[in-house]
Image 1 (cartoon, helix red, strand yellow):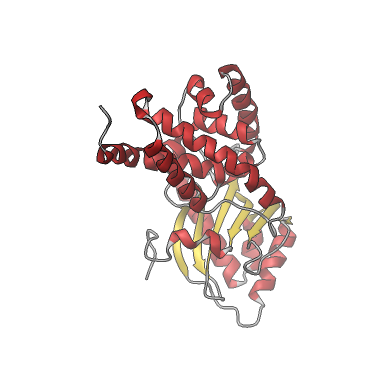
Image 2: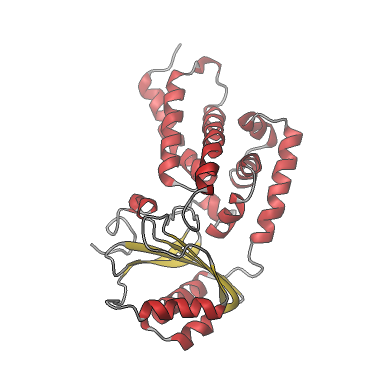
Length: 297
C-alpha cells in the first residue's frame, strides 16, 4: 500500500539534516546544499517507493548524484571566481563530522580532488557507508570506490595537522590574533604567525579583498599593519568567538558595516593559515548576529 504523503515527508524530514551535511561537504555551499536537497525531496515524492529497500540509501544516492552533476558546472564557475574561493563558513558541525576531523583545512584539500574521489571519501570515511552503498550512490563498482576513497584519503591525511590544537589553546590564540591584528601591535602579531603562514581572503568580487593569497609572516604582518593605518579604520566589534568549520576563529563587523569570518589553522602553537570570508553572498545564511551562539543583536 502506498505511503501517505505525511509519512513520506516525515521520513525525508528525519533524514534531511544528514542529507544537508553530505551536500554541503560535497559543494562547500550552504545555499547550494539546500537547493540540492530540495530537488532530492521533489524526486523522492515522484519516485516509486514500493521498490525502495532503504529510504536513507535511496535519498543519499539521489543527493550524491545531484551534487556530482552540480560540481561539473561549479568547477567552471570557480575557474572564473574573483580571488580565492573558500567554503561558506558554518558553526555547528555534527558529531560525526567532528569525529572525522572534517575542518575547513580538509575541505580545501577535498576541493582539489575529483568529484568522484570526494564523494567516495565522504560517503565512506565520514558518513560511514559501506562500499556497496557508495557504489550505488556514485554509479561505480565497489572496487573502484575503494580506489577512489584511498586516493582521496592520501590527500586528506597530508592536509591534517601533525599536532592538532586543543580547543582551549585554539581559543587563546584566536583571541590573541584578534587583539594584535586589530590593535596594531605588530610585534605581538608576528609572534603568533608561523614563518610560512599563508592568508586567504574570499571577497568573491563583491567586496574589497586580496585577489591572491599572501605568503610569509612578514607580508601578512605588513597587510594587517596597512589595514590598521587606513583612514577611518576602527576596532572591529566581535559577533562570535569559537569554531568555524572546525577551526578556531571569530566573526567581526568590519568598518564597512558588514560581517567577516576569520578562521585559523594552527600547528605547533603558531598560525599556519588564515581563512577570511568577506563575500556577502557566503554570509547570508548566518543571519547575523542573533542566530550565532554568543552573538549580540
